[in-house]
Image 1 (cartoon, one colour):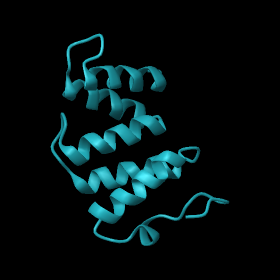
Image 2: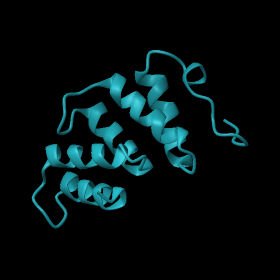
Image 3: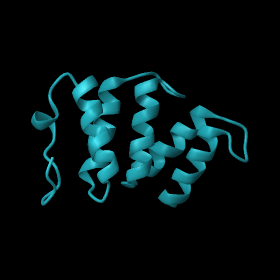
Length: 106
């Protein structure tokens, strides 16, 4: 499917905008878009995993999803978000886990 459309539908399902709120469907759609390297879906999937929204809570999977989003580049907002979450939930410091994109200072 179209990753952007899957992400947007997931967002609508997660927030109940124009449709019934369905967190499990939101996670399914985020996973489908994330598999196609959609940075926004990876970030929202991380939030769902971290908070246990529509999926079993998994801090390890959330950290991996945040890191994958930040590694794709062009996601500076998620880089800082991911670093904060990795520091808090990843069990190790962000510098050990992830280096910023080339040309980007911490």
